[in-house]
Image (cartoon, rainbow over all chains, first blue to last red; front, side, top):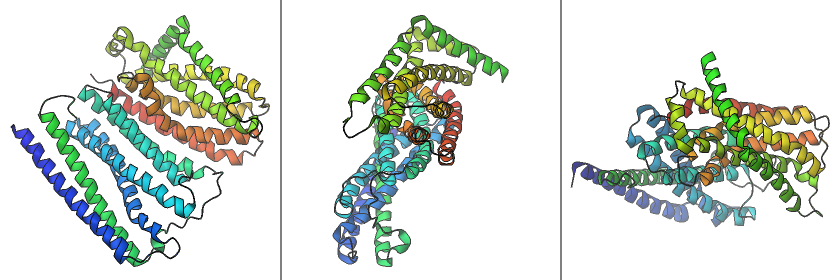
Length: 232
Length: 226
């Protein structure tokens, strides 16, 4: 075993530790959300999904920003580790986008009466998911590591630039659907005890994101250390 | 600056000359645009959806999808005989290569649009009298932005497996803002709405152009490092 695989394994162990802590915290969130947080008066039990959905959306956006930051830093410093970091963040982002895109409709059906509507925020998050997928597809279609790193960094940066534009245009888009009664509470109107559960969940999800990210990064390092230019 | 532009124009002229000699890509893209228009006409329930209601969307789907398949050509033609390496060896900056490719792609896409627009008027029976300048301005503003992004992505896609598939996967999300804005403007123009309802969308298109052309100029050289 070489020194670099040992280093990579240390990173993986750290990542797995974080993941474990994240999952434990998530279990606590479920307990607190279901047992110790009052049920919302109008929405009833479906509102509990809020404590998973919002943190997942937050993590997806965070992961997306990390891809952008990693890409900019890569083009500047040309350190392959930054490329691996951006790749790990993108894959982590796909996971959280999927959580966001599945929990959203599950809540929407009982509350809005429909699984999907072309609401600005929904369209925006779906597009975020497509950007992640495009980024991932590009990476899997290229062999040369240095070339793949440069090309995906360019896509990562352009994707980050696109996000505010999509945000702007979909918000201005006049939707033909009748606006559903948006019962989703905004933060200031949220009672303190629910806010506490939300923050607890945000914290747990962020730890989980870090766990996924570090583990994925360590696995990438290990694959590199073992040789195989296309080991990732 | 003058050198940069001269080099860019030379590269664009080379691309257009290559295209004019064979005309393969242009003829295929025009045929594609015409067929999209025909399919759209039949891909609707004529009893419930009027041609007019669908017209703006049809116009922009035709423009953008034809442009995307045409953009593949831009760097695919440099792949043969490693022509890109020769271009990179030439004493011109990477920025000039981007601008040259961008200009050639713009000329190419504008040609498609110039042919598709009269066909659209003919097939969809819409009257564009009085709003021609507005539609032209919208087309220029919308096209300028997404062709810049498309040029960068064409350079990326050509180096991947499944280049023809990779380009649309990468570029379609970037078409969303210009297509939304252009469709909103076109439908308002056709409905004879006042300028004040259009101005905001025009500003978004202009901002998109400014931001993405700048970023593409800045990022393109990173693709061409060897």
